[in-house]
Length: 189
Image (cartoon, rainbow, N blue to C red):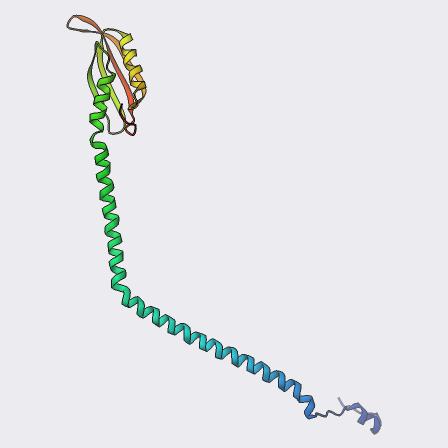
């Protein structure tokens, strides 16, 4: 395709604007670029100095850590030994606390037994349950025994399992079986 310009020459010259630059037109953009460059350069230098300072601090802390490593290891070892010692002392105090429990339990049980009642079995399981069996001449004596156990600070939840008539040496007796809970944390009277 062929193009033909039909405009006269004078109008052709007016269509092309004349682009002219002056030195004052370039001052503002150059100043903005220079300021931005200075800001970027200043930030880079500041960050570089900060990185150097942090690396120096890290090196100092590493050197101090290496110097204190034997003391830190000793402190850790002593802390572990102390934990083991505390565990052993806890076991010893638990054994010490339970050492007199059986004696206190038998003493309190003997105080609770009324006249004309004989225990044939007193058995404590691994927990806190105490099984008691015995004989007496009356159900009232069994009831009195249960009441005394309930009032005692070492026994709780006394329950009668069996109370039945029986014979011992040709005498009529009441054979009974009861259970109760031992409360070892309570002091004996």
